[in-house]
Length: 115
Length: 156
Length: 270
Image (tube, rainbow over all chains, first blue to last red; front, side, top):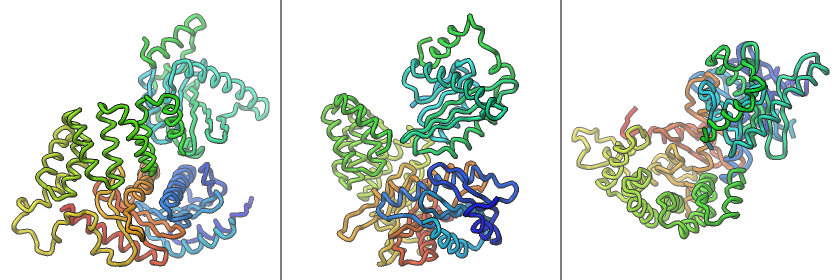
């Protein structure tokens, strides 16, 4: 079964080093659609990354920096990227070696269709 | 806000849930409506009311699920304008416990579900096998209910 | 307005003599509403002048407002009412350090640490003070190590240069330890910006506890007018913000250089 996000997710998951990608509700942290490698805990990544993105977005707005677009967290064991608009967040989970610059461009382009 | 428990074995898992999910209220009870632990309630009357409603809602939604889907609903969620309610069943051997929790925009349904799943695993790991499934005898029920509330609100 | 703040406000409105103003003032301060927190706290203090926690709250908000003399007065009142109060000793230690009185800073922080030996932020602060003390600096110290910066606000000036980017070091409680965020009219919004953004690191820490990715070491995000980079540092968090015109890769480099600056300042040399 396909959704409006299937093509986007299929494109993101093809990047070298990407282990999962999802479209998540920012407010509820629930997965709208996803493409995940086996073993990736999609529910936990969705809920926690959406919450983190929402916190960053609100903090940036409260600090007077305006709306937040792209977000990235680097950790010892991998990277989480997020970009959101209109209560939807694209979440990408990746290994440390992933080319983040490429992902960022594609995620920001995809956001245009969320408008 | 203070967490209080009537049964010590629920304290650590319930505290972990409350801290990580950042909910406003939480109460863990058995299907008879007896409270095992609570966080965020101001009075024993509030806990008693919440437990009675949670137990009744779980029982009726279970029957409704059987009618509609052939099996009881596993959890219920209601989203209000500001606050949301999640009501879930914790499998415990042959029986279940019930978690009722209230949260706002500091948390989310996804977070509550993730940490609820962790709560279920944690409780399964620490509970005495016969502790949650022991039915409350009708003649002891009210006394047990009041004992649990007294323990938690310091009037034992 | 969060539910907590709303509920506390309603409680205080219903009973203006309630001591709930302490919780409300702290909640407002943490949410960045410093002036409102100040009004609530000072009015509460008028009614409850004998409460040490009320003086402590006013002191902490005074720090956020840059009113160091008032903060000092309030914390000294706390110590009169509650000798050995850890928060007041820590605050006075911080103030003395800011003003270059390293002996007094070490005395206050040492006393606070003796009361609470497990407080890592106190231990780190005391190390910083001792490392900055001219009498205690090892003679063989490498000459390339920068001179101690007594005005912590200028810690990142040489790293950032004259460009409009900024860096702030926050402790675990969201207090500004070093750096500043100056507006075009010269106001320092470091405490406000820091209070807003420090919560992001709490969220990151929670996510790391549950996602099996190890420790996080950098967060970068792009907002409409600024790019923000942050990293854990000395028990708190280091923030770097730059206009969107600055390339994201360069913001990351600034963060790394600022982290290095903090490490050397703290004397940890990793």
